[in-house]
Length: 417
Image (tube, rainbow, N blue to C red):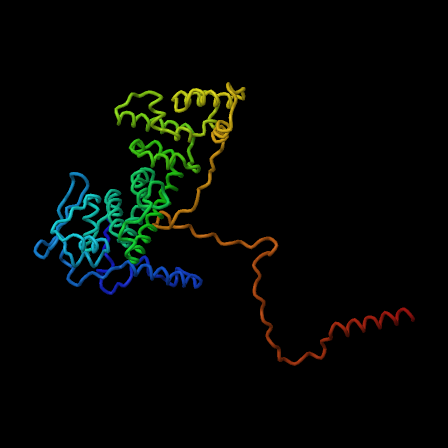
């Protein structure tokens, strides 16, 4: 069970544990970077009012009521203007603009809103499941609470696999500026508050890091992702985000083709349309061109893929002609030639990038020690310092020069004798 407590509510704890540097973990060259990170961490830690403890779900001292939830699943939460206005600029602007005693929040899941209130009221926040962590991250992002967003991102990164990646991909698309479908402009109050803009940037940073790791997991576990039953429930933008990736490491292109066919069938059933090839192609649009058809074997495998009719009849004829080295049935233009080249391009087998270190799952492996090269030889031993010798010299001991001279003299005597 994962329990998260607001660090600002703990006495004698000025900064979160994750932001406190250790002299053993960092070298001297990263001192300036550590100080900058500490400044960022202190910026988003709020100091709750001294009377905030014990006010969560307290009806006696409540002066505001929130009705939060999506659709018909809305719950009632009592609140306190002074506490919430001091902990979030979004709450401060909301309470300033609304003079009524009840505020409806219909754009946040009630479970995420409940965990957000618990965190702001210094109550333990429990992030046990993917659902609770995901909706809490959404609430923390929308109410600009980077410290809670950080903990949700780290918790989701711990549980990240192929199935979890499909669950969180939809929310990440709306919270990350790097993914398609993100909002093109910040909320209106962001322009009036520099501090709120800084908090929004910090929240986006944690969401972007989680989205980056999510896409890397999808690349690595592409087969499991495409075969998961939750794949059929993806929106069109999320589907395109996955199948358009060049770095999908699938065992065969047939896995992508079958996944697209299942998704198109599910869309036709959802919108009550006939299960015809034309309707499936209309549901997929340009995504039907994403599989690399010419990487399939020209025999039964290619025939099975083309039998799903994700391509137009003429396009299927071009694929068969190119795969079997036959002449094309019609003149091939530049657009068709580009498609054929794309369908024949091999996928890279290496990861697109390294993951961001958010949890033990993404902890970087220690670098191996470098062995000395053959040119350098073995590691040299330190030279021993010669100790001075103060003993008297032996008179019988002769040097090498004297021995050489004596031998040369004897040789001359023998020569001229």
